[in-house]
Length: 157
Image (spheres, rainbow, N blue to C red):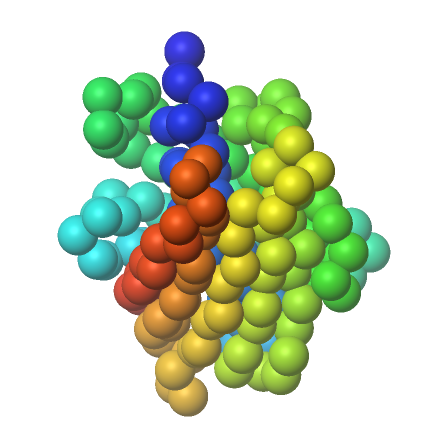
């Protein structure tokens, strides 16, 4: 069973960071049915599959490999991509996290993540003009209140 801290770190860092760019970008450039692979050291092996859902929104399905002593997991978010909060499910069960993903334009997205109803982090993503790569910059809040900046890189498979 995942610890609360590990789940927060995993869900927050992966979901909001990626969802920001992936979800909206997938809709505009990547298209429903695309698969993305995270390439930075902290997230190697994480994949994201994008599906249609929620009346024009996107379902973001993150497949997380075993890491940090934690077992593999699947995180799913059904986002309308309009800035409204959507629950993040781990193995089909509520995780206590919500994500509010907003499409800024065809290449930029922003996300606000909450854990247990409290702000947990924000992220901004930029999709490359050719739609084959994305960079996500996130700031997460740790229990001590100190923010941690994380930069993710993703490529379309």
